[in-house]
Image (cartoon, rainbow over all chains, first blue to last red; front, side, top):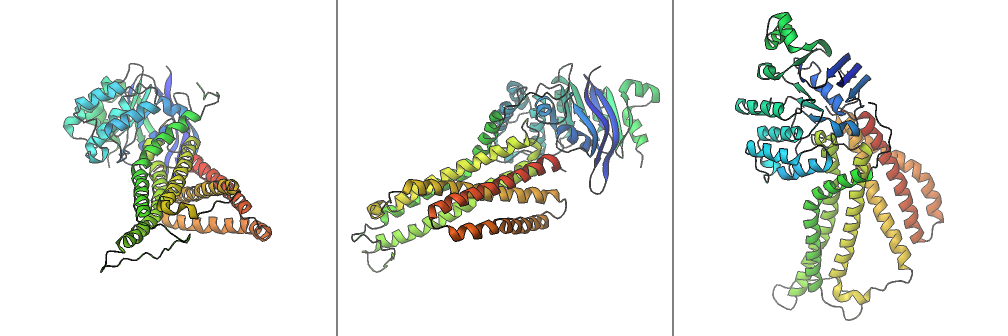
Length: 232
Length: 264
């Protein structure tokens, strides 16, 4: 099976701590992957390295077979864990800008999702609430027809009612061959949609595999297993 | 699938970065420039025509009589004009450099740096924006100058070899603006390398860069300035030095962003 994300002995050191400690990882194509771990385990660092926002201290990371750079960014879609929207554009300006930069951006899909979430195209980004901004960001990411979506805490800042819609949006807006990597703490919310999980602890992968096999092997849900593995 | 080694055409991407940089800055800078032209026009209409070939810049406003009202208004608008000229220069520099800081080093970098654009293309797009705004700014300044003195234009005598001087002035103007903006980019990029003491790092960067630059060019300057009598040639030499400095600042900024940028 072709891998969409590969890490070989990947290490990321900051001045005061090592966020990732030589991880080896292969994420297969066509799966919804849960990147799970407690705070500070290295989830965001791993996704930022894949998105090309950080440089590895050592080791290698390949996104769809490419080193993170302009070419990989053109293919893979990434949503950070924070609001990045500027305050001078309207929602529509941003949709047009994304369509201008990404060949795989589907404008109509973006407009459909905006309508479903009752977000006005002409609204200024600065007038949106934080939750709505996060929804806009997710729409922009999921409107791309990408082989890999990397979503860092996509449902963390939205209300529970919107979570179901967002998860449905994620599931229904990616093609069969695409891979979605979801990093989140809200495991019970996303567990039904996952078919592969990666457990990160203190910068190391401590468990990875198929969700059904893990459930069968351990006799418990991923949420229960997470609570057991990371009990304080 | 390894990274393809085909040569990437950077121009469409530079064009796109330029387009969105201009879209951002035009909202703020265009009204300021329009205001300068409007005030220049009003001041120009109020400033009296000189009869003896010498302009009397001593505009007064006599509240007891109406004979000097136009003079008073001329003085007022003339002052506003110069205030706007200074403010617009500060605003232009501030808008362009703040955009760099927010767009490539702040939260907006999570959008801009995940676009399929290389660091070099991001920088070139911004450099083009600086050059275009400098040309627009210079053109507006010249036009506003003409408007302010529209009734007295014949008193300005244009020398025969003005073309060479004018081109020298334009080159020096562009190169020095670029140099200043790239200097600020570099200071911000260096400051961003420090996680906790960014302001301190920026201050240190300013001191180090200025002392290095002044020492390096001081040696050349003393030599050539002492021998230079032609002010036009001086413009060209200064433009060249500003371009060299711009290239140094731009290259260091590029490598900091490419190799050391860590958005945390």
